[in-house]
Amino acid sequence: MDYNRIFEEDDDYSIGGEEIDLQKEAIKEAVKKLIQDNYWDPKEVTTKKDPLYGYRVQKGEQEWWFLTEKEANDAFHDKKILSIETDGLGGFVKKYRDKIADKFVKKQWFKKALKRRQKEYINSLEKEPADSNRYENRLEQEMAKADVSSPQKFYRHLLRKAGDPIKYYKEQFGDEFTNIIEDQDLIDWDLVIEDIRKESGRGDALASYDGEEHEFENIFYYRVR
Image (cartoon, rainbow, N blue to C red; front, side, top):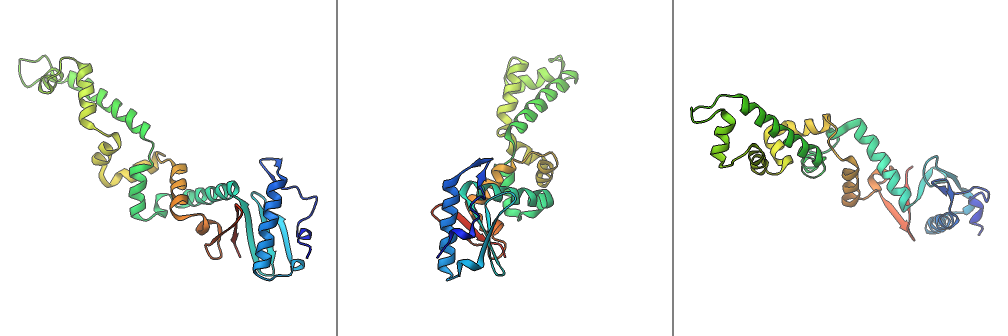
């Protein structure tokens, strides 16, 4: 049977603008396997390039999406980003929202925020009167309590006492913490999406018909209709 006829020979298959014949051939072989597994007549099968990734393969009312692994990862990322832009954190169950808050926030922002907060705290103490005439101001009083001899050492003492910046701010804001990290764009969504892919796979996002991912020699295909 002529399986090549389902692909137009002048239809260059490209990724990133570069023609990659080997990957086109690999997709041909995966399509051939699907046809053989379902005992289809190749004459009833048609293909077309997807506008963004891979090939769409049609047989009657069925439609399948064939992708290389890189394309599958990119398509999965695009689908999840679209969902996140629509639903935000509200699109996740509470357990996973808590995981996002624990593991996928931009920690550097909180480190800087904590340092800024402690410096502002020290400046405010310096302007406050002490409770005792033994000290020139409240800063000296608090430094004595902490058993440190300079504002710089007191600053380092405050940072050590606060501990992990994310844990510190979670304790400060409680249930509002998740709203804050979303409103302030402090979530690393790329890491979230990668975690979802590793935990749950790509099928649910890419195979709109049944949620199943199929693989043949590192080509991945999904039924979408």
